[in-house]
Image (cartoon, rainbow, N blue to C red; front, side):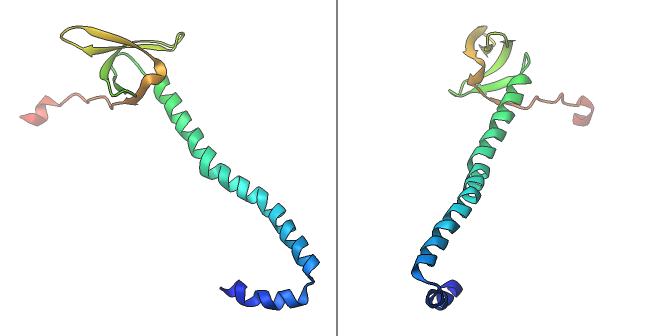
Length: 121
């Protein structure tokens, strides 16, 4: 609102050719600022998410409870990092195992802490 009140004052003092040149110069000066802002807004969070996922996959170990991108909840039977494969035990009773690409793991559930039997008594 304040700028709209002052703009008529500046419009009378500055010729039309200078106004057009200053607006295009303003555009070229603001372009890098907008690009940097967009990078922080879009690219930076994506890189952080990729780093979190990479660390999660590196920390996978036998007997970890995981969920795949398809919603399969299972226990890690083995991890083959050389071939980027993981074998998950889906059913303990039937000893059912499935092989997935390592990136199919979406979530690693926190390990259950052993319950202190003394605290229950």
